[in-house]
Length: 245
Ligand SMILES: [Fe+2]
Image (cartoon, rainbow, N blue to C red; front, side, top):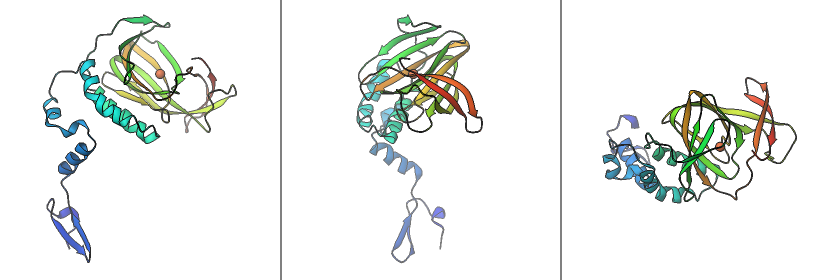
């Protein structure tokens, strides 16, 4: 009997009584999947845009909003993963963006807003050379971060064991991701995965977008005081919450 992988695409054979197999073309299957998921691969107009110029923020919001509104309804861990990955797939079409009017929030850090709050906010952050955004937890909104200029080291952490953002007792965290964020790179923060992040700008500074979608009522952001490493192999650290950022 022929192995199914050796069959011509779409040919059906009966390989055992009552068992029929067919080898499908990946491209046909992928096209069907894109169409079923209402993702941008479904349309020929999407293909025609592949060589188009960088998107503006307005284009990005217009293109992504229909699918974002559909996917945001599933707030499970996997639902948030699907939402953030889809948002990121659209966000990488954004190119060089001029920073909007911004305000100084201290320690070499400025923030401005391109869009928001519906269905998400698009904040533009700017960090001077070697400036730091200390680690903090996202407790009510998930985030796609897109690098726009320069580079920054982004570290993501999660709590080991039960999460209690109110505790003043020592806690343990694990560094789950360490990434150099450059223009076009994305870093995802859901409420269940990679939900603590901190940034250190490189020598040339850094700029990026935080595309934040609020899923719960707003509350104070817990900052994380990172202590000494506990287990280098497990990438765990002692830590403590600093409520209020
Ligand atoms: Fe953040």
